[in-house]
Picture 1: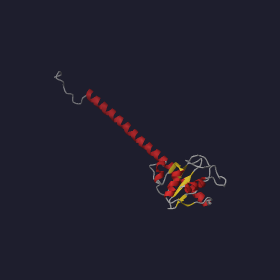
Picture 2: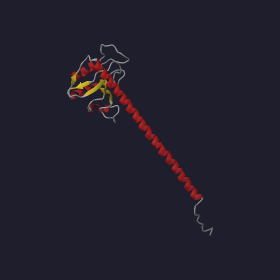
Picture 3: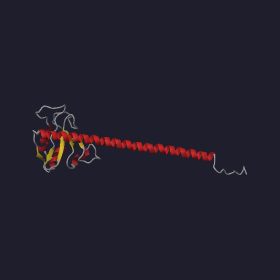
Picture 4: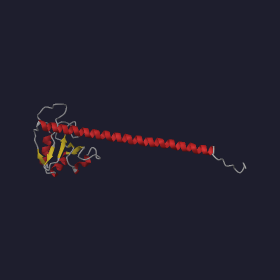
Length: 185
């Protein structure tokens, strides 16, 4: 595990290349020996600790593994979502290294990824963030619709109950077939 842990720290360390934007470039996708892929990121823009652009890191953000990694499930941002379509925040780096080792270790590690690999990592991360945001919006919309439906039923129920109460009071005050009382007979 130490070898994998060291490799992850090297992968997450800032490269010699200058930043092209506000943030540190994305780390290329991690490929395990069994073919499982996952995004492992750490910077001030990710769910990592420390939340800065330099390491060493104690916790990282893992995203969109190609297969379910049980060790990560408790860190899922959206546990109701498919475990291969969510982000796992602040995962201890030792847990990530153990999960990678369980999958046979790192298949490949290129400390100087090509522009194509860098762009793929950025696209994967951007897609992942979009999917997380979309899921959050879908969940908010669903909660809003459920709350609106409950309010509608509660509101309609109150009106129905009030109408029945007034009808009952009207029946008491103005019976349809008044029955004479013994005194009236």
